Amino acid sequence: MIPNGVVTWAEIDLTAIAHNVKQIKAYVGKDTDIIAVVKANAYGHGEIPVAHTLLKAGASRLAVHRTIDGVRLRHAGITAPVLILGYTPPSGIPMVVEQQITPTVIDRDIAKLLSEQANAPFPIHIKVDTGMCRYGLRPEDAVDFVKYLYTLPNIIVEGIFSHFSTADEENRTPMLQQWETFQQVLADLATAGIHIPIRHICNSGGILSLKAAHLEAVRPGILLYGLSPSAECQAPFPLRRAMTLKSLVVRVQELPAGSAIGYGRTYTTPEPMVAALVPIGYGDGYHRLISNRGSILINGQRVPIRGRVSMDQIVVDVTGIEDVNIGAEAVIIGKQGDEEITHEEVAAWAETINYEILTSVHPQVIRVFQGNGHAVT
Image 1: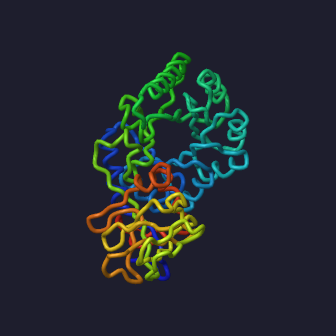
Image 2 (image 1 turned 90 degrees about the horizontal axis):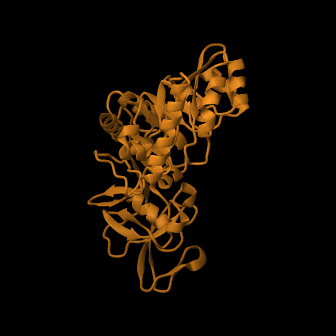
Image 3 (image 1 turned 60 degrees about the horizontal axis):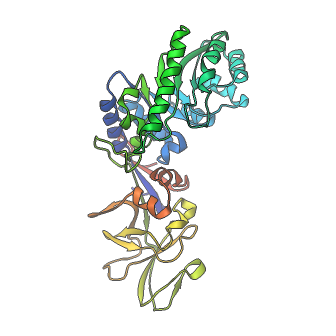
């Protein structure tokens, strides 16, 4: 059911998401927890319904990137552990304490502030940068930092993690080097008499590429939503794509030969053409680079985009396709009849990756949730 007045929407299949998390859980085994990554609005799918679905289907924990994302989950009634993967500023400490959200801490000042404000034992995770040069401790600093944390009241070092940078690539050498560095940090901690209960390093690519690194927990992201990390790193178990992006035909007109379409007049009809107008554009997250490259589906057939993608409209060539009328469904990404346009195909047109196609879908695009007890957002 499409909400009244809506002409462009994303259908989110929560049953598919539940299926995917169950497949991942079966693959990693009962001794490895799933920390389901729902950052970036659950990769564009809608964080609140998706979070409830993931936890119901077998995820033990959730992960976000920013403090405010964790607060939104708490306000939506999520009581499961929520890990902030990124930086928590000093101004965010009262929120994580109040909402019982688990921060990632790599800074002594932040750790001290957290210790002072927590009024009971408070779990944190630490991150080690094993080769990505982003957020995280240097491996050689990890032992001393954990020793410092152990001197602070109310601080419990619950977890330690890192992040693979190339686990979805054919060349395994960098991934194995990171894994070796992480193992050395764990060994150094063990030598110092320190055991941290939850160790995790595997993103979606790592889950598929290095089973030895599954440890106590893994952090699937894109796999949850039914996509594999890359062409070189495909899931060996069945996935179901959760998002279909749709719109409607809002105008059909016959254009004579020599008609210039859209901004910049980048396409001129070489002969008469039947043009359909579809209200989706880069303001909705449909990339401008797709101009004159991509196609969508109408009446189960591929129809090419002619002219530039505007902020909120595209024109497609429906010449020769029968019964294209105002109100006809247009599938931007997904299946219609026997045809399918995948996120990977759209990513190729936009010169990017499937992750960005998912997360680019703007929040203004209504999410219509299906399955798992939901009908409409």
